[in-house]
Image (tube, rainbow, N blue to C red; front, side, top):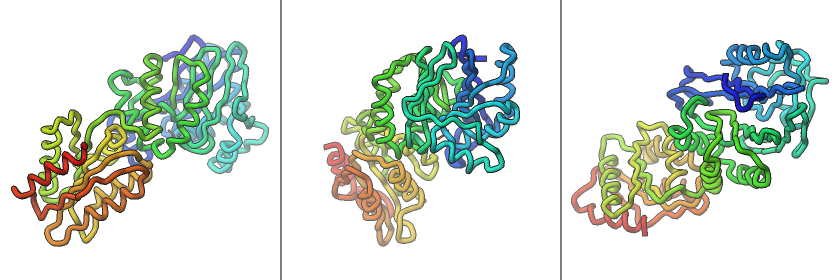
Length: 390
Ligand code: FEO
């Protein structure tokens, strides 16, 4: 069993057979539901796990507790989303005397999720800044509303300088993944798609955390972060301000028979010729949209290329733009390529969707191609690349 410190055991579980997290995000290698056991004069469990892995979780906890001959005194509920609260009922069955520490908002959610459980005399509500001594260990609770749900709080172990960060600093990578290999890309995809909409709330939490001291971040998904915290902090700051990580272009396309894809490839090639170092070409019909959203958060510019379909946008492009609106992407520069064999409208419709985003500039003019890219279109392709990067 992994330990964060001699007193703090990792008792999280990994689900390598889930397929789609939140019924929508592909997780090829699975997802981890992290949970921690703090063993002191009093024993606290930090969050439960998805009900799919309840058995593994209870087993890990029992193994860790067997060395003590005691039962847990507290469950700290930082987040009520079912992937972290789903096993609470089983925990209470195993340990009927356990108390639950959570925010006022979480206590009403508990009643909604588990109407057949009697929580009276079990719940201790905590407010922002409240502390709890477990003996040697002093915990401080810090509310973090809308990082990702309204009831969220994070917990600082002031003794061991560990921040239990709930969804913040989480990742689609497994908890056992090497941090260096996996964190940036899978944490970015997790952040952009799950927490992305709530940038101002993340900024508010980061402001609270600035004055606190910790050397280790223990999130509810993905690896525990022990080194290089400044790097992860910097990325989180950029993502939550909707600032790109780097100058580069995401060329995202929705093509039916290849004509629009060919135009996208030519635009990408022209951008590379013009000296843009990072050009990422992404087929929205074949890549899951969560990867495209993550790249949109990472890069400073986009070229969106869509065929017209049924007098509207092709669904894959419409879906991508809908996701960008949900996640509130901002501060980007975008060029448009539309295709149509008789009445192209994709450019106008993409511009209308982008107008819903804050501080997103659409460079003029839209490049319109008729069925396929033609030799005569090449000067316009070059001009589009130049005006995007100017
Ligand atoms: Fe994994 Fe918002 O929870």
